[in-house]
Length: 121
Image (tube, rainbow, N blue to C red):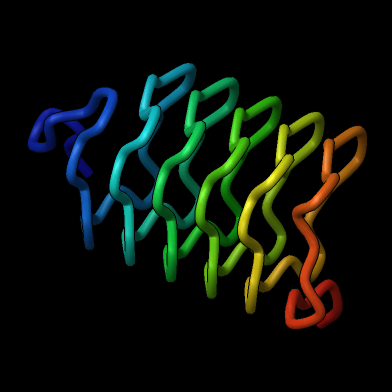
């Protein structure tokens, strides 16, 4: 996977992008559109995804440790087995998201949970 093929930065339009396994450590994707993107197994540790659209994205097994997801849209996203340790998920839309097996230790979750969020396999 070649990250250079995509314009990575704040407000980037990465809808449907194939970024599986990419190293996006500390990337600034504030307000980016990643709807339906494949980020399976990607490293996003310390990234800024504040207000980003990740609806339907595949983030299974991704490293999201310490990521800022404040106000992000993760509706229907697959976060199974993802590492969200210390992530900021305040006001994040998790409607229909799959968080089965995800590491949520020290994650901030106020106003982020929904009845349709799946935490179990």
